[in-house]
Length: 463
Image 1 (cartoon, rainbow, N blue to C red):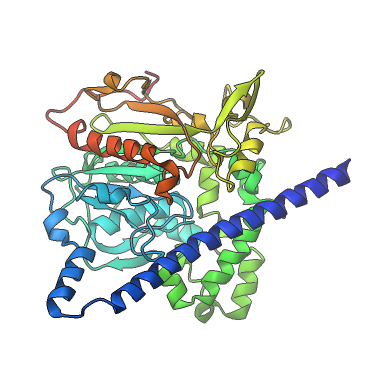
Image 2 (tube, one colour; image 1 turned 180 degrees about the horizontal axis):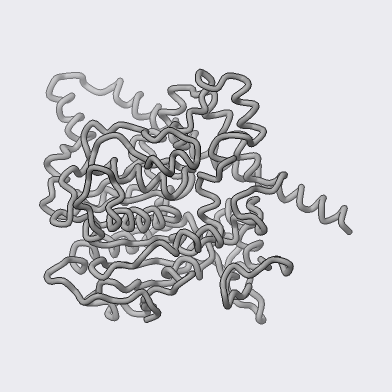
């Protein structure tokens, strides 16, 4: 029996690796094909001065004409393995949703870096200057304190009088929450006037607000959430990322970057011995735990959430997704063909997750049954609102009239039928639901989330 289970585990690992590799190649090849088609199209266009000016105007809208503070911009924050504007050619992580409003920014953050590091990067992307990861944090995790330089901030006037709407997908939602806490704590050296009120609203789309059991299926150890199992999907990914960053091929890194440049893993700085050290797990982000997966475990998220607040002057809304249903008392996938092939196996596995009986429960009152419903990447219970270790004020929205007007300091949430990547990358897959979702988000930002007078303070307790 143990041999059979071992064989099945290796088979599942092999299939998962192939599916994820093929999907990654599909995304990469799609981006390359788009770039080639654009280059070929451009080569056959008239090259007159007027035509060139018109083309530049179309392709590079003036930042001053749109992101000028006349209305609060909307910032879309990608999730794990995601990318912002300027990466992967003309491919859009949010499947072109940014075109629905003239005041939208799509930052490119580290796709595998920790929630902390991504929050720091997001601040300097908006305000400008050199990314400062923090002296103490950098010493603890063994990387450079300073990173990329933004010569000009993408919204340099950002302050409490010029606040921002944030929309985060997956891990991007937690990045926004950590950033807001950092603003409240005045954690950015040289910016003593920051406050939580710099953020007007937070929208979480399939947001990783309470962690996910998928991390354990991918390879994180339930008994030690900072470490990976010796043989797992994440170990394969780790090796690939280390080699990619060590080779440091310029055009590839410009096309897609995992975000670990501040760990200085490239061959010019580490050499062959450095590569061996990285692969053996003696150095680098995977050795210290300063990367995204530990932050997405239930235990890692609870540790992070213990430092995060829901603020009384900010509007919060979340969309929790699921692709499961109850059948004769058992949680099963709600569809076969409606779930993306990348996620189907994980949807099924996550319905069957059982916390190891010999380990302490991650929180008081934990039940496996609460974590069965999922979207293939995150558990639905995790996406509604911050719940652990302290439950924040929340309200389940059944009818939109229930949140008109919106009250700040409360997490309004909807539960919708969709898998984790239904509303990103491929717009055609979601069809009319794509437009309904993003039109609703942008309309809420523009018409229902604004400040007129200071609202009453709300405690971080159950609604």
